[in-house]
Length: 111
Image (cartoon, rainbow, N blue to C red; front, side, top):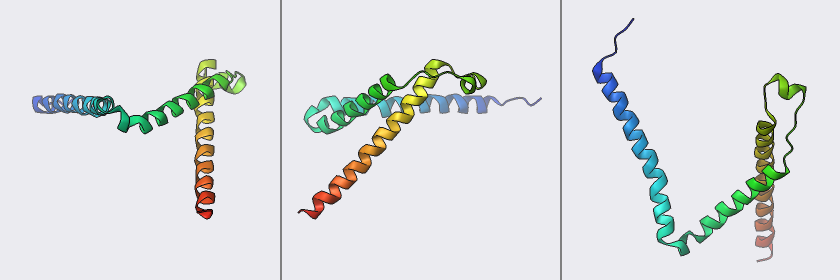
């Protein structure tokens, strides 16, 4: 069995601490900037709100299916519903992207 060096342990702990600081900084500073100037952040907040609404609607519409396949792979009804909601939200967002691209191209023709 190999003995671990104290320098390796210190390096790992330092890496964990720096990773935590970086993650916290990456989360906290954008929030501070967002609430610092709400007028500039209005478009981004609207986009986040629309995405949350799509996710909520997809979750509410998704069925909690069960069956032989779900039992075989040990998938609970709640997990089935979350999976279905993720798929449905992906389809909705994809359709929105396609519609926006088509709208942009058609609008460009009339300018």
